[in-house]
Image (cartoon, rainbow, N blue to C red):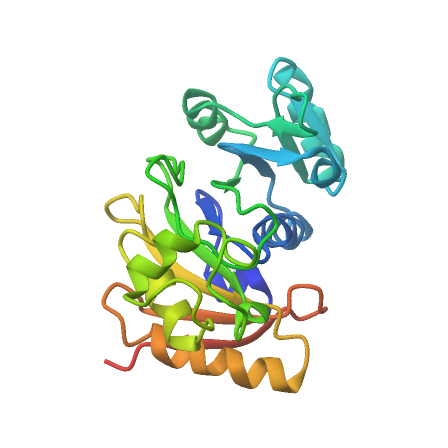
Length: 252
């Protein structure tokens, strides 16, 4: 199944991606699928991304040159909107007021936003100031990588490990289990933090790149759909032609 189909994303959507283990890949994969269907997609970040990640987009425009956005969307179907770089090899994204203007444009069908950072780690919990989820968000997707399972819950392996431990109700340093991942992803102060009223919320478990990883990922999905507020969870291998391995729905 495609990511766009599994998430039920269509014209008018504003998608915010949080967590770790594949946010940027998810953003560009979703944008590419939607553009292939004839939708015009703006990608951006409400925080920052690396210069290397900027190069993953087929088209890029500066926040100060949005007159070029329409022609780039005509040509590529998708375009990354970013601001100025800093001295740490990062590129800032769009401020909230600009994201609102982008979403309101007649020549933009969907906006996809990377809404926090994870230091390239597969699992995280948000700080006080995170994530930066735009209030127009219609779908919040919280991402985690299966490869965190079994690793110690410490700062080397988990971004903001102390917060993750507190949300999961476990000591720092213990091995990360499926239960810990599910608790943090589904927690209203974890993966669901900042979810606007009325927005859908879908956890996405990524890097199910072989049968063993997929089996571990299914354990997480089974736990996720037991949490209030989680009606659907995805198991993905985002580098595959059909990236969604399983879409698990809550049994009602």
